[in-house]
Length: 375
Image 1 (cartoon, one colour):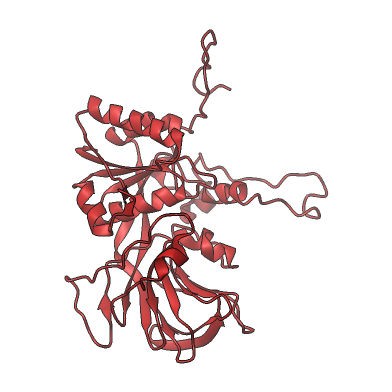
Image 2 (cartoon, one colour):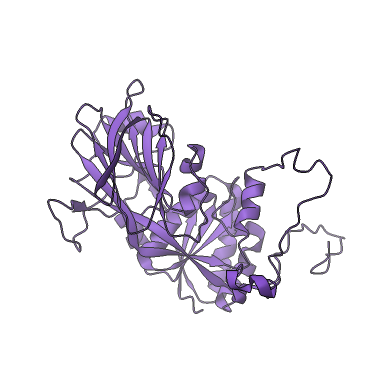
Protein backbone atom coordinates (compact mmCIF):
# COMPACT_ATOMS: atom_id res chain seq x y z
CA UNK A 1 0.00 0.00 0.00
CA UNK A 2 1.25 3.48 -0.83
CA UNK A 3 1.04 5.69 2.23
CA UNK A 4 1.34 9.35 1.24
CA UNK A 5 -0.29 10.92 4.28
CA UNK A 6 -0.50 9.75 7.87
CA UNK A 7 -2.62 11.23 10.65
CA UNK A 8 -1.52 10.84 14.26
CA UNK A 9 -3.95 10.85 17.22
CA UNK A 10 -2.01 10.69 20.49
CA UNK A 11 -3.08 10.35 24.13
CA UNK A 12 -0.89 13.26 25.25
CA UNK A 13 -1.29 12.46 28.93
CA UNK A 14 0.69 9.22 28.68
CA UNK A 15 4.48 9.28 28.34
CA UNK A 16 4.57 5.98 26.45
CA UNK A 17 2.15 7.37 23.87
CA UNK A 18 4.35 10.43 23.35
CA UNK A 19 7.41 8.17 22.93
CA UNK A 20 5.59 5.96 20.43
CA UNK A 21 4.51 9.06 18.49
CA UNK A 22 8.19 9.99 18.05
CA UNK A 23 8.83 6.57 16.53
CA UNK A 24 5.93 7.05 14.09
CA UNK A 25 7.20 10.49 13.06
CA UNK A 26 10.71 9.12 12.55
CA UNK A 27 9.34 6.30 10.37
CA UNK A 28 7.33 8.79 8.32
CA UNK A 29 10.39 11.02 7.81
CA UNK A 30 12.50 8.05 6.67
CA UNK A 31 9.91 7.03 4.06
CA UNK A 32 8.91 10.50 2.86
CA UNK A 33 5.38 10.24 4.29
CA UNK A 34 3.51 13.39 5.32
CA UNK A 35 2.73 13.07 9.04
CA UNK A 36 0.09 15.32 10.62
CA UNK A 37 -0.59 15.57 14.34
CA UNK A 38 -4.33 15.78 14.98
CA UNK A 39 -4.52 17.45 18.38
CA UNK A 40 -8.13 17.32 19.54
CA UNK A 41 -7.41 19.76 22.38
CA UNK A 42 -6.36 23.32 21.63
CA UNK A 43 -5.72 26.19 24.05
CA UNK A 44 -7.84 24.54 26.73
CA UNK A 45 -10.75 24.04 24.34
CA UNK A 46 -12.00 21.14 22.28
CA UNK A 47 -11.86 21.08 18.50
CA UNK A 48 -15.11 20.50 16.67
CA UNK A 49 -15.36 17.47 14.42
CA UNK A 50 -15.06 19.75 11.40
CA UNK A 51 -11.82 21.24 12.73
CA UNK A 52 -10.42 17.77 13.39
CA UNK A 53 -11.25 16.67 9.85
CA UNK A 54 -9.61 19.81 8.42
CA UNK A 55 -6.51 19.27 10.57
CA UNK A 56 -6.15 15.71 9.34
CA UNK A 57 -5.56 16.82 5.73
CA UNK A 58 -6.30 13.87 3.46
CA UNK A 59 -4.58 10.89 5.15
CA UNK A 60 -4.37 7.35 3.81
CA UNK A 61 -3.80 6.03 7.32
CA UNK A 62 -4.73 7.17 10.84
CA UNK A 63 -2.53 5.87 13.67
CA UNK A 64 -3.93 6.11 17.20
CA UNK A 65 -1.64 5.91 20.22
CA UNK A 66 -3.54 5.28 23.44
CA UNK A 67 -6.40 3.12 24.62
CA UNK A 68 -9.80 2.43 23.11
CA UNK A 69 -10.93 6.03 23.75
CA UNK A 70 -8.09 7.39 21.63
CA UNK A 71 -8.91 4.80 18.98
CA UNK A 72 -12.53 5.99 18.86
CA UNK A 73 -11.42 9.56 18.08
CA UNK A 74 -9.12 8.39 15.31
CA UNK A 75 -11.68 5.95 13.95
CA UNK A 76 -14.25 8.69 13.38
CA UNK A 77 -11.70 10.69 11.41
CA UNK A 78 -10.67 7.64 9.41
CA UNK A 79 -14.29 6.89 8.51
CA UNK A 80 -14.77 10.45 7.25
CA UNK A 81 -11.74 10.17 4.95
CA UNK A 82 -12.29 6.49 4.07
CA UNK A 83 -8.80 5.95 5.46
CA UNK A 84 -7.39 2.93 7.24
CA UNK A 85 -6.93 3.09 11.00
CA UNK A 86 -4.22 1.35 13.03
CA UNK A 87 -4.68 1.22 16.80
CA UNK A 88 -1.54 1.05 18.94
CA UNK A 89 -2.40 -0.40 22.35
CA UNK A 90 -1.52 1.66 25.41
CA UNK A 91 -4.76 1.11 27.31
CA UNK A 92 -6.06 -1.33 29.90
CA UNK A 93 -8.83 -3.20 28.07
CA UNK A 94 -7.83 -2.93 24.42
CA UNK A 95 -10.68 -4.51 22.45
CA UNK A 96 -10.12 -2.18 19.51
CA UNK A 97 -6.37 -1.64 19.31
CA UNK A 98 -4.15 -3.93 17.23
CA UNK A 99 -0.42 -3.76 18.11
CA UNK A 100 1.80 -3.02 21.10
CA UNK A 101 3.72 0.28 21.16
CA UNK A 102 7.07 -1.48 20.78
CA UNK A 103 5.90 -3.00 17.47
CA UNK A 104 4.66 0.17 15.80
CA UNK A 105 7.53 0.49 13.29
CA UNK A 106 7.16 -3.15 12.25
CA UNK A 107 3.41 -2.58 11.85
CA UNK A 108 3.96 0.44 9.60
CA UNK A 109 6.43 -1.56 7.51
CA UNK A 110 3.85 -4.34 7.11
CA UNK A 111 1.23 -1.84 5.91
CA UNK A 112 3.66 -0.31 3.42
CA UNK A 113 4.51 -3.80 2.11
CA UNK A 114 0.85 -4.92 1.87
CA UNK A 115 1.22 -7.57 4.59
CA UNK A 116 -2.14 -6.88 6.20
CA UNK A 117 -5.88 -7.33 5.80
CA UNK A 118 -8.76 -4.91 6.34
CA UNK A 119 -11.43 -5.49 8.96
CA UNK A 120 -14.61 -3.68 7.80
CA UNK A 121 -17.00 -2.66 10.59
CA UNK A 122 -20.44 -1.10 10.73
CA UNK A 123 -20.88 2.45 12.03
CA UNK A 124 -23.96 4.36 13.21
CA UNK A 125 -25.33 7.75 12.24
CA UNK A 126 -28.56 9.53 13.16
CA UNK A 127 -31.35 11.95 12.36
CA UNK A 128 -33.28 14.03 14.88
CA UNK A 129 -36.56 15.91 15.04
CA UNK A 130 -34.53 19.12 15.39
CA UNK A 131 -30.97 20.36 15.68
CA UNK A 132 -29.24 19.14 18.84
CA UNK A 133 -28.28 21.83 21.34
CA UNK A 134 -26.40 21.80 24.64
CA UNK A 135 -27.76 24.25 27.27
CA UNK A 136 -25.19 26.71 28.56
CA UNK A 137 -25.51 25.45 32.15
CA UNK A 138 -24.60 21.90 31.05
CA UNK A 139 -20.91 22.69 30.63
CA UNK A 140 -19.94 22.60 34.30
CA UNK A 141 -22.45 19.86 35.12
CA UNK A 142 -20.95 17.43 32.62
CA UNK A 143 -17.27 18.40 32.80
CA UNK A 144 -16.15 15.88 35.47
CA UNK A 145 -12.54 17.00 35.07
CA UNK A 146 -12.35 15.78 31.45
CA UNK A 147 -12.42 19.14 29.70
CA UNK A 148 -15.11 20.98 27.75
CA UNK A 149 -17.94 19.23 25.99
CA UNK A 150 -17.91 18.60 22.27
CA UNK A 151 -20.05 21.09 20.36
CA UNK A 152 -23.42 19.93 19.05
CA UNK A 153 -23.21 18.08 15.72
CA UNK A 154 -23.73 20.06 12.54
CA UNK A 155 -26.57 19.39 10.13
CA UNK A 156 -25.60 17.52 6.98
CA UNK A 157 -26.20 19.68 3.92
CA UNK A 158 -25.74 16.80 1.49
CA UNK A 159 -28.81 14.92 2.79
CA UNK A 160 -32.45 15.77 2.39
CA UNK A 161 -34.23 17.25 5.40
CA UNK A 162 -37.78 16.01 5.82
CA UNK A 163 -40.50 16.81 8.36
CA UNK A 164 -41.20 13.11 8.90
CA UNK A 165 -37.67 11.71 8.53
CA UNK A 166 -36.03 14.50 10.53
CA UNK A 167 -32.82 16.49 10.34
CA UNK A 168 -29.71 14.57 9.16
CA UNK A 169 -26.78 15.14 11.53
CA UNK A 170 -23.01 14.91 11.12
CA UNK A 171 -22.67 11.99 13.55
CA UNK A 172 -20.48 8.92 13.31
CA UNK A 173 -20.63 6.43 16.18
CA UNK A 174 -18.18 3.56 16.43
CA UNK A 175 -19.60 2.17 19.69
CA UNK A 176 -23.03 3.57 20.51
CA UNK A 177 -25.63 6.32 20.63
CA UNK A 178 -27.21 6.75 24.08
CA UNK A 179 -30.27 8.62 25.34
CA UNK A 180 -29.87 9.07 29.12
CA UNK A 181 -31.53 10.87 32.02
CA UNK A 182 -30.21 14.22 33.22
CA UNK A 183 -31.87 14.34 36.64
CA UNK A 184 -30.54 11.88 39.20
CA UNK A 185 -33.94 11.45 40.89
CA UNK A 186 -35.97 11.02 37.72
CA UNK A 187 -35.75 8.45 34.96
CA UNK A 188 -36.26 9.26 31.31
CA UNK A 189 -39.45 7.99 29.63
CA UNK A 190 -38.94 6.99 26.01
CA UNK A 191 -40.98 5.31 23.30
CA UNK A 192 -38.77 2.90 21.33
CA UNK A 193 -39.56 2.18 17.69
CA UNK A 194 -38.03 -0.41 15.36
CA UNK A 195 -38.57 0.19 11.64
CA UNK A 196 -41.25 2.74 12.51
CA UNK A 197 -43.28 0.35 14.69
CA UNK A 198 -43.60 0.90 18.45
CA UNK A 199 -41.74 -1.78 20.39
CA UNK A 200 -42.46 -0.48 23.91
CA UNK A 201 -42.38 2.62 26.11
CA UNK A 202 -39.61 2.51 28.71
CA UNK A 203 -38.88 4.32 31.94
CA UNK A 204 -35.14 3.84 32.45
CA UNK A 205 -31.81 5.41 33.36
CA UNK A 206 -30.77 5.24 29.71
CA UNK A 207 -31.50 3.57 26.40
CA UNK A 208 -28.69 2.82 24.01
CA UNK A 209 -28.16 1.61 20.47
CA UNK A 210 -24.79 -0.06 19.88
CA UNK A 211 -22.84 -1.47 16.98
CA UNK A 212 -21.41 -4.99 17.21
CA UNK A 213 -18.08 -3.28 17.95
CA UNK A 214 -19.75 -1.41 20.83
CA UNK A 215 -21.47 -4.50 22.20
CA UNK A 216 -18.53 -5.04 24.58
CA UNK A 217 -18.68 -1.44 25.87
CA UNK A 218 -21.61 0.28 27.64
CA UNK A 219 -24.13 -2.21 26.27
CA UNK A 220 -22.20 -5.10 27.82
CA UNK A 221 -22.04 -3.31 31.19
CA UNK A 222 -25.83 -2.88 31.01
CA UNK A 223 -26.37 -6.61 30.46
CA UNK A 224 -26.43 -6.62 26.67
CA UNK A 225 -25.17 -9.48 24.48
CA UNK A 226 -21.67 -9.90 23.10
CA UNK A 227 -21.91 -9.64 19.30
CA UNK A 228 -19.14 -10.56 16.90
CA UNK A 229 -17.57 -7.41 15.40
CA UNK A 230 -17.81 -9.18 12.04
CA UNK A 231 -21.62 -8.99 12.21
CA UNK A 232 -23.83 -6.18 10.92
CA UNK A 233 -26.58 -5.39 13.43
CA UNK A 234 -27.96 -2.76 15.79
CA UNK A 235 -28.11 -3.72 19.47
CA UNK A 236 -30.78 -1.90 21.51
CA UNK A 237 -30.29 -2.20 25.30
CA UNK A 238 -32.28 -0.50 28.09
CA UNK A 239 -30.33 0.52 31.21
CA UNK A 240 -32.10 -0.14 34.55
CA UNK A 241 -35.62 -0.09 33.10
CA UNK A 242 -38.66 -0.04 35.42
CA UNK A 243 -40.46 -2.85 33.62
CA UNK A 244 -40.37 -6.62 33.38
CA UNK A 245 -38.96 -6.68 29.85
CA UNK A 246 -35.33 -5.70 30.34
CA UNK A 247 -33.73 -7.62 27.47
CA UNK A 248 -31.71 -6.35 24.55
CA UNK A 249 -33.12 -6.43 21.04
CA UNK A 250 -30.83 -7.09 18.07
CA UNK A 251 -32.09 -5.67 14.78
CA UNK A 252 -30.93 -5.90 11.19
CA UNK A 253 -28.81 -3.01 9.87
CA UNK A 254 -31.71 -1.73 7.74
CA UNK A 255 -34.08 -1.67 10.75
CA UNK A 256 -33.60 1.79 12.25
CA UNK A 257 -34.19 2.32 15.98
CA UNK A 258 -36.17 5.41 16.96
CA UNK A 259 -36.20 6.93 20.46
CA UNK A 260 -38.92 9.51 21.31
CA UNK A 261 -38.93 11.38 24.64
CA UNK A 262 -42.44 11.07 26.06
CA UNK A 263 -44.68 13.86 27.30
CA UNK A 264 -44.19 13.37 31.06
CA UNK A 265 -40.49 12.63 30.87
CA UNK A 266 -37.68 14.82 32.09
CA UNK A 267 -34.96 16.03 29.74
CA UNK A 268 -32.60 13.51 28.18
CA UNK A 269 -28.99 13.85 27.01
CA UNK A 270 -27.82 12.39 23.71
CA UNK A 271 -24.33 10.89 23.86
CA UNK A 272 -22.26 9.57 20.99
CA UNK A 273 -19.39 7.23 21.95
CA UNK A 274 -19.54 8.61 25.49
CA UNK A 275 -19.58 12.31 24.53
CA UNK A 276 -22.69 14.39 25.26
CA UNK A 277 -23.78 16.06 22.01
CA UNK A 278 -27.16 17.54 22.86
CA UNK A 279 -30.25 17.62 25.09
CA UNK A 280 -33.79 16.62 24.12
CA UNK A 281 -37.11 17.49 25.75
CA UNK A 282 -40.55 15.87 25.65
CA UNK A 283 -41.75 15.34 22.09
CA UNK A 284 -38.23 15.30 20.59
CA UNK A 285 -36.87 12.19 18.94
CA UNK A 286 -33.79 10.68 17.32
CA UNK A 287 -33.47 7.89 14.78
CA UNK A 288 -30.33 5.72 14.83
CA UNK A 289 -29.36 3.66 11.80
CA UNK A 290 -26.39 2.10 10.00
CA UNK A 291 -24.11 4.72 8.45
CA UNK A 292 -23.27 4.56 4.74
CA UNK A 293 -19.54 4.71 5.61
CA UNK A 294 -17.63 1.77 7.08
CA UNK A 295 -14.72 1.69 9.49
CA UNK A 296 -11.65 0.06 7.91
CA UNK A 297 -9.33 -1.34 10.58
CA UNK A 298 -5.83 -2.67 9.84
CA UNK A 299 -5.31 -6.30 10.85
CA UNK A 300 -1.76 -7.66 10.83
CA UNK A 301 -2.70 -11.10 12.16
CA UNK A 302 -5.93 -13.03 12.70
CA UNK A 303 -8.08 -11.29 15.30
CA UNK A 304 -8.85 -13.78 18.05
CA UNK A 305 -11.90 -11.86 19.29
CA UNK A 306 -13.19 -14.65 21.52
CA UNK A 307 -9.77 -15.33 22.99
CA UNK A 308 -9.46 -11.62 23.70
CA UNK A 309 -12.95 -11.66 25.23
CA UNK A 310 -11.93 -14.48 27.56
CA UNK A 311 -8.74 -12.66 28.55
CA UNK A 312 -10.09 -9.12 28.91
CA UNK A 313 -13.24 -10.14 30.80
CA UNK A 314 -11.34 -12.62 33.00
CA UNK A 315 -13.69 -15.43 32.05
CA UNK A 316 -13.24 -18.56 34.12
CA UNK A 317 -14.50 -22.09 33.68
CA UNK A 318 -17.35 -23.43 35.80
CA UNK A 319 -15.89 -25.76 38.46
CA UNK A 320 -18.38 -28.47 37.53
CA UNK A 321 -17.34 -28.27 33.88
CA UNK A 322 -13.64 -28.93 34.60
CA UNK A 323 -14.04 -31.24 37.59
CA UNK A 324 -12.45 -34.11 35.68
CA UNK A 325 -9.29 -32.06 35.15
CA UNK A 326 -9.43 -32.30 31.35
CA UNK A 327 -9.09 -28.89 29.66
CA UNK A 328 -11.55 -27.95 26.96
CA UNK A 329 -10.17 -28.57 23.45
CA UNK A 330 -9.33 -25.49 21.40
CA UNK A 331 -9.72 -25.02 17.67
CA UNK A 332 -6.63 -23.71 15.97
CA UNK A 333 -6.64 -20.14 14.66
CA UNK A 334 -3.47 -20.73 12.63
CA UNK A 335 -4.24 -23.70 10.41
CA UNK A 336 -6.99 -24.33 7.83
CA UNK A 337 -10.13 -26.04 9.19
CA UNK A 338 -10.62 -29.74 8.39
CA UNK A 339 -12.67 -30.66 5.34
CA UNK A 340 -15.97 -31.14 7.13
CA UNK A 341 -15.72 -27.61 8.58
CA UNK A 342 -14.23 -25.77 5.63
CA UNK A 343 -17.61 -24.31 4.63
CA UNK A 344 -17.79 -22.43 7.92
CA UNK A 345 -14.94 -20.09 6.90
CA UNK A 346 -13.50 -19.88 10.40
CA UNK A 347 -10.63 -17.74 9.16
CA UNK A 348 -9.94 -15.70 6.02
CA UNK A 349 -7.52 -17.63 3.80
CA UNK A 350 -5.31 -14.54 3.51
CA UNK A 351 -4.53 -14.74 7.22
CA UNK A 352 -3.75 -18.45 7.48
CA UNK A 353 -0.09 -17.94 6.65
CA UNK A 354 0.33 -14.89 8.91
CA UNK A 355 3.20 -15.10 11.34
CA UNK A 356 2.22 -15.08 15.02
CA UNK A 357 2.82 -11.76 16.73
CA UNK A 358 6.07 -11.78 18.70
CA UNK A 359 5.94 -10.53 22.28
CA UNK A 360 7.97 -7.45 23.17
CA UNK A 361 11.26 -8.45 24.80
CA UNK A 362 13.41 -5.80 26.41
CA UNK A 363 17.11 -6.49 25.74
CA UNK A 364 19.55 -4.86 28.10
CA UNK A 365 23.21 -4.19 27.33
CA UNK A 366 25.19 -7.41 27.54
CA UNK A 367 22.17 -9.63 26.89
CA UNK A 368 21.72 -11.82 23.85
CA UNK A 369 18.42 -11.26 22.08
CA UNK A 370 16.35 -14.43 21.58
CA UNK A 371 15.93 -15.65 18.02
CA UNK A 372 12.51 -15.02 16.45
CA UNK A 373 10.00 -17.68 17.41
CA UNK A 374 11.86 -18.67 20.59
CA UNK A 375 11.10 -17.71 24.16
